[in-house]
Image (cartoon, rainbow, N blue to C red; front, side, top):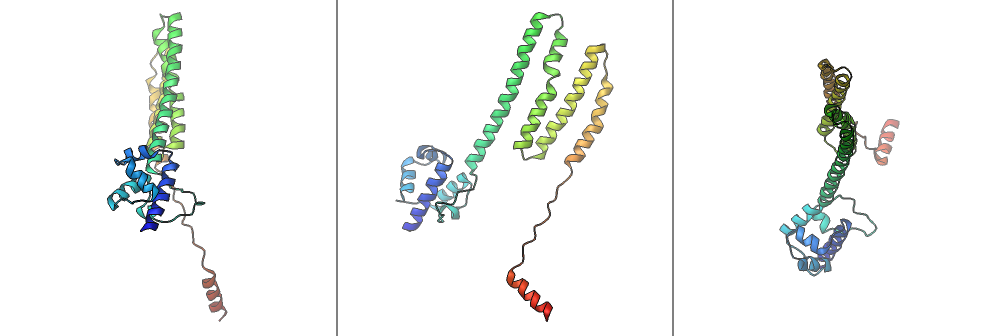
Length: 226
C-alpha cells in the first residue's frame, strides 16, 4: 500500500506540473481541499476510487496510469483534458482577436473616408466592410485548417469564402455601373455543389501489415523446403 501511495504521489506531481498549476488551483478544479492534495503528493494518503476516477478524468488518463510506476526519464505524452480546454480557449481567443483587429482597421478606414467624403456613404460602407470579407474568411479558413478537426467547420468557412467573393464581385459591378448584377450569385450554386462533393470524399488509410515473427518465418521456410 505504501508503494502505491508513493507511486500515485509521483504521478500526481508530474501531471500537475505538466499543466503548470499549483496545488491550490488543482484542489479547486477537483473540488477538494489543498491540504488533502498536499497529503497525496507527500505519499501520506491516497484518495478513494471515486476521487481517483475524477482525477483521472481531469488529467485525461486512466486510474491504472495514476497508480502504475513510470520511469522518470519517460515523458508523459498524454494531453490532459485541462490542456485541451486551455488550447481550445486560446485558439478561440486568437481567432477572435484577429477578426476584431481587422474590423477595427476597417472601421478606422471607414471613419477617415467618410469624414472626407460624407456624400458617398454607400460606397464607403461597401469599400470598407464588404470588399475585405474574403480576407476575413481566408484567415478563418487557415485557422480552421490548422486547429479545427471537424470537417463541418472547414466546409462552413469555404462556403462563406465563395459567397463573399461573389458578393464582392456583385458590389464592384454595382459601384461601377449602378446596376444590379444578381446573376453573379448563380455561379455560387455549382461552386457550392462542388465544395459539398469535395468534402464528401472520405480518405481511407490502408491498414499497416504487422511484420511476421522471425520464428514464424523460419517455420514457413522449413515447411517450404520439406
